[in-house]
Amino acid sequence: MPGPLWDAYGRICERLGTDRTNDLLDHMRARVREHGDEADRAGLAAAEAELAERRARKGGRPKREGTSRAPDSE
Image (cartoon, rainbow, N blue to C red):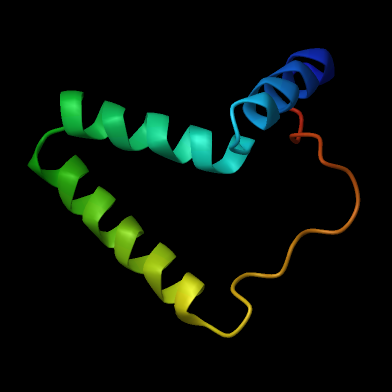
């Protein structure tokens, strides 16, 4: 992902009162619901359960240290 695009997206999400992670997750959920088949929706349900489990842990998932940039795509 080009750094300037990732940074611009982060600023926009901040202005919208969200962050890149939640915005991307919402977009991905909507895509799976709209275009996914049964297996895709089952994967979404499993992912939602995993996220709920992570959030239930004390303190949730630790924040990554270092840069806020997305890793370069391969």
